[in-house]
Image 1 (cartoon, one colour):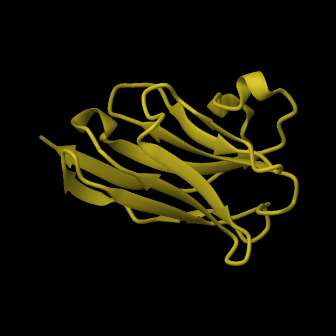
Image 2: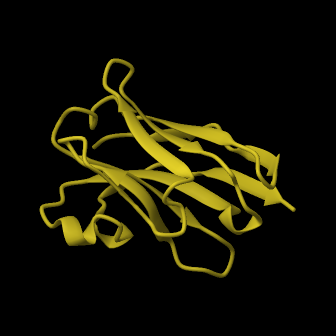
Length: 125
């Protein structure tokens, strides 16, 4: 099973930017749907952005226009560029992968089978 490793989290002020990366040496370019998810204290894990094996991306309404998901097939990494960060974006961010055939569920974490350990993002006002 694929081992995922996130990096790039940290603390930033509101309006700032961060770039998350996820090392995914087996999943990238092998038919998996990859995604970024987040979980804030006391809240359920939620989908942030996903990208399928054809390069189609899907975003949660709360981040569309501010976050950009991408894959680097040469480096085998999944990336999340986060701009115009808001305090509400504070959470643990996870990289995940899975085999998904229904585009309606790509933001549902229940459909992903392998996960990284997470990286913390903190946005202060």
